[in-house]
Image 1 (cartoon, rainbow, N blue to C red):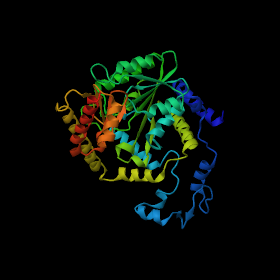
Image 2: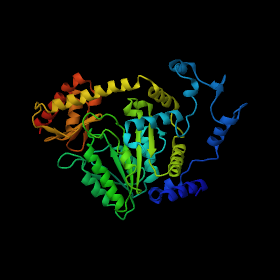
Image 3: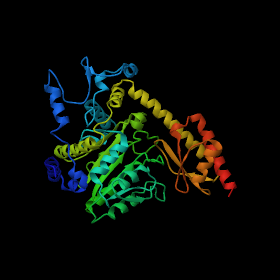
Length: 433
């Protein structure tokens, strides 16, 4: 094993042996090179005042070389803020700005030890880093039965983890914390478990209430006290889009200090929060009991980044940073939030109006981009195809009964027509049976 990897492992084990035990074989082997092109280039950037012939970019007239046809569309930006490589951990100013934003929006982080957010190539990349660092073949990754399908690819197919699902809702149609607790305690004596907590949930648009949040934290604490090492990941892709009296913060803050056997990791990003899906700017943040352990985890994360994408795109990081620094940012974001909330409320009004009879029910939703219908008598995939072929309407079929509708991308005046059309398709399919 490389001495740098061994040094990082020793630090993590000394600071928290439970976290060291959570690392995958790759997680233990990975490191960020301290002696190499990047480190030597960084040193030259500060000391090479005459000529700096270290890194693979081209310069012209003291600025990064660029094409006029590109720069003409980006004239508001200095070439050094868009053409140069961003550091593997991301643009330092952006990391600091995102950390400040996290603390402002999550007061429960006050007094918590957590690291500086590391920039990822959006949230999928952040989850992939978690999988690489902590998931080995046969390890359990636990998440609800209503989930984003990429979890299986990222943790199950790529890393060979055993997918363990539990029902998202209990009999009262609240978050099934008892199911989560049972799945976790089943890992007693088996080492560790990776738990994915995605709120607002994709595909249902559900966020637990404060009491449910406490139950989730308690379930994870119970597992830790039973000897299970828990990697607790908050997938906060749709963070902030809370339309009702649900949790208004990430559970990251509470999980960060719940038990020494729990490693809390926050994966979030500008992708959905700031409506910049194509920018691919996400973040991964670790909580930990010591700066030494946080630093070691960061170095291992940088090793994964260096070995895969090397570093994220610089222009989009600059664009997001400029937005966060703008005095108009908060007002503009509030405007978009209100549009999204109005759409969600209109959907709920339509579904509660009684106009659709008993052909479906819907799963509780209070946040995010989506909601899910539960079709009572017909197959969801058949309805999906009918909607496409006959009416030119796209939805997502999930299993036999569930139809996901993204109200986020439908203008409020068109929602009534959308659900009326879905109702027609359901009647068509039912009539043809």
